[in-house]
Length: 123
Image (cartoon, rainbow, N blue to C red; front, side, top):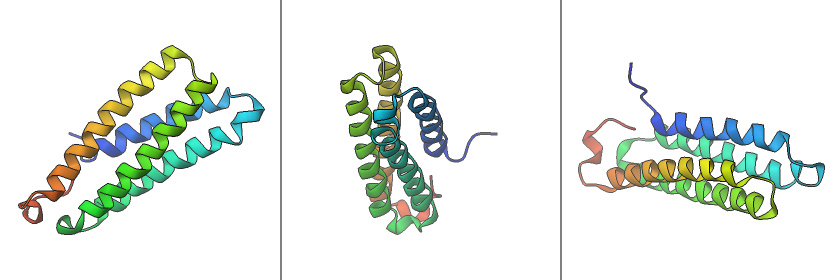
């Protein structure tokens, strides 16, 4: 059976990966930047759930909230990398996930802003 919510699943898997990374942060960052990064990841996932639950013809503003929270998440991830909390190899993997998720969000937003949105099923 094909997954009905691929963006949700992809984001969820990224958050789980980030949880494993934060476990290894030193105490100075685990409960500050690490927590902020994880909280923002969960906020992004919550926004995806919310956007999936609104009618198609008013979905675009909710998807913009998803995009905004995802941008905040990317900034926190970048800060973790720049500080040295995430290795180059792990950051490379995260960037690949970010690119894929970003494309999914942008495609969803384009779909939601199209004139035929009200007759299609939600993403």
